[in-house]
Length: 266
Ligand SMILES: C[S@@+](CC[C@H](N)C(=O)[O-])C[C@H]1O[C@@H](n2cnc3c(N)ncnc32)[C@H](O)[C@@H]1O
Image (cartoon, rainbow, N blue to C red; front, side, top):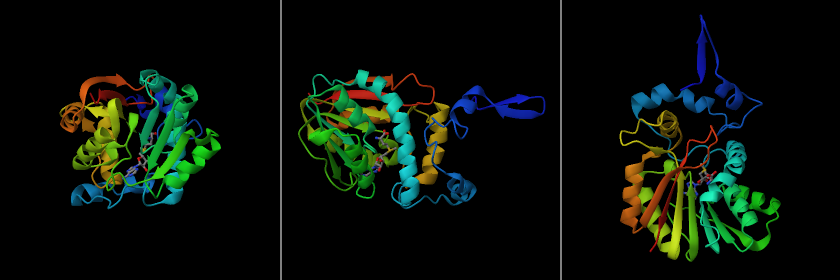
């Protein structure tokens, strides 16, 4: 995976690992997140097949959640300019950001498009972090924050654009199918959905970062994993979407393994 180099009998960090994975230089996803204890459970989890009852740390440990959200925000701010270039912002007056974390993408979009109004939906256990981040961004009343469990409640309606970034991998396939149906209902006619996630080959083994991330999701979530492009296409079509475009690389940044799919409610 390009993380270690062997020289004679010694291993050393590759330039990539030195730049993105060493503490102090952290700009890699989860740089502030201490997952040591969770990974320590790998042998037991693999032999027993037991998974956590709720997504960790989002719905279990408040302090770790704060640090993880900060890490995601740090990365998202770097990715946002590239992602925004893909979004049909000029045609959109309203944006719904589902599982928007600290609102990094929404805040960037609203700064880029002064006519845009947005709602960020976050889980009730996480939403206070979102509200604080949006308040300190001083973006005014254009961004509203809503506490809502997307696995249990329908999304609000009336949007031109729905962004679902790095949420699918945290949920099971059944929940994702329901989420995309709900996203279809919440869009205005002609509106677009933008999905950002690690998209895998049909066998689920490529890209290798995604395969490793799926192991992490086995340890951190009740039903999450990285999904294949074909699976996500199928969910989009079953929900009613058409004109599916992509996958595009979410950004050229070496620490960003995500792809983007865009589809339309026509
Ligand atoms: C990996 S983070 C992605 C944050 C942001 N969208 C990004 O791309 O940087 C996943 C987010 O989805 C939220 N989330 C997960 N399950 C949820 C649920 N059932 N209801 C609402 N939000 C949820 C989490 O709280 C978390 O902030």
